[in-house]
Structures are given as structure tokens and as C-alpha cells.
Length: 128
Image (cartoon, rainbow, N blue to C red; front, side):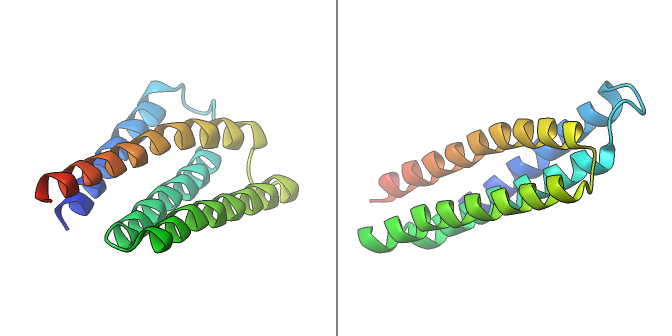
């Protein structure tokens, strides 16, 4: 369970840093914080779900691992695409701020997710 705790700590630290930069580093009123928050929640939940699926599947047989991790990836991406489409079509938030922040958060959090996978694999190899 230690890699999961480490991953959650890294996500929280990264989130605090990103929000500090957004809140204090950008001129007040220049962006829609509601749009940025919605993008952040979507990407944060996606990253957390991806890592939890990886944790679940890591000790399973190869076919189950592949189905859970890659099937989960496909499902998560389809869900994100549907949510983004819904938000953009319904104009729930400022489109430009939402899309830009969603893209930025997604790129950053995917890197953290991959690094979490690598750390978990390294720890599994060291135990074996």
C-alpha cells in the first residue's frame, strides 16, 4: 500500500503547487477559475482512477492485467471525451480557459501517473 500512499502524496503536492501558481501567478480576473477547477477535477479523478486500476491489476495474470489497464484506459478516455464534449456543447464554462487548463493538467498528470507505474514496477521487481 506504500506506493499508493506515495502516489497520493505526490498528487496532492503537485495539485497544491499548480493551484498556487494559478491563483497567485496569474492576474486576478484574467481566467475563469471555475473552468480551471472543473478541468482539474476531471484530470485528477482520471489519474487517480488509472493508478488504482493499475494497483488492482499489477498482481494479476497477464491477460487480466492487460484487460484492466488498457480497457480502463479506453473507458477513462471515452468518459473524459464525453464529459469534455458535454461541457463544451452546453457552454458550462469559459471554453478557452477550460480547454487550455484541461490540456495542461492532463499532460502534467499523465507524467505523474506513468512515474507512479514505473515506481510500482521497480518495487515489484526488487521484491521478487
